[in-house]
Image (cartoon, rainbow, N blue to C red; front, side):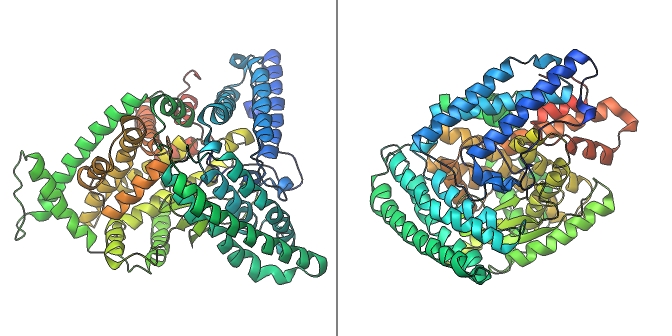
Length: 603
């Protein structure tokens, strides 16, 4: 999963301004229209884009730090009613200005950016006025508090003393975030699962102090050190006070429904995906793909289990039960090879070396030289996903990309750990590394950062990003990655089923009212996931909405786009050139990448 620290925004990490400068959203000369009238419209749009981006990052200072704009490193996000109204007023003003521009007369690149910006403006207004997560989702606040420190300290974009001074100012202000949470959140609307997750995450802020602040505090002296120590002490007190409120007030009184319902779900889905596929079409395509992949897995299982003692019946036309039994028996062979519970990160490092070497050797796509590191996921971000790719703001040149993995909790029993490691066995960790790092999210992010439109980079499409991660897995298998391992073909298809099940699960939870029992059956039986993985995904589906479908929808659109390009180019189709071209567009919604690639009308 591509890392996204803003629960309220339909965004991912991207491009912003270098330190001390306002961001510029003007495209380069190649994207400008030749006609003078059209050029004037492009100039208007460039000015609007720049002013929107500057204003939006001022309103979201924690995210500004993440994407590389360090003008607001001393500030934290404001969740007061006045601040919410400021966002709405700002967004409506920008939307009115955008509506006044003849977008049909813009260059094709700017037509895409205009549609992306309009979606974001409308989405920001809808998020505050209609979805109202600020009133029922405590993750808004716990994520913001942790990110305020993490985004400053995790990467060396400036000398440590400078970052410590900024962290001091932020730590002085974080207690206000907790106070706003207690004022804004209505326990009657807060779902129990959201309250419990926030209560678990809250203490992670203290871990950030212990990990990043305390070991480096000696680099400040005199009044600066005294102010830092006072800020730390104040924040520790504020975290304890907020923890008491979470444990004694919010969790016991949380009565909200985690299901957002059909109307909100369909509206959010359109903002999140910007895809022509409807909820019904997504479900129909997903169910068909599950049926197809299960058929392929059965055929592979027949070959793997042939002549093995104790193998189940495997007729040419199996019943549903016979198909299930054969696939499960074959999958048991893949679960044998798995790392020890304390060696997952070490093995992931090994797979990164192998996947990178293979991608280079097969010349599948241009491989960047930017560094990538595998780290333990910070505690304040755990409880939502197993892994994520966290790229630096691309103007923070030369900084590390993090491939973060959540460790197995110390309080898990060996049985729970074994369940997790059966799911994340050696072969699956290879696939996870492909998805998150090479040639998945890390590589895609490095390419996308080179696109000249800063606005497009800040509003990168989760559908493009997650879809590319799934597509990258298929690409590597197609190119022969681990082709000498007959079990990899089976493990890969099982892995693919997870992403497809995500799309079905998301709408089943929030619209169809699926029970936990039936959700677990979808995951553990229909798509062969282990109990620990399925249990975690059930939690994730309750905590989020409209993000889980991005994997399947985006991958389907990527597969469709490549097929169309192959049909257009015929024998002249060049796979590496195609991939470099797709990634050069800066990660817009896939429908726009296709329209740019195939010279179709921008819609």
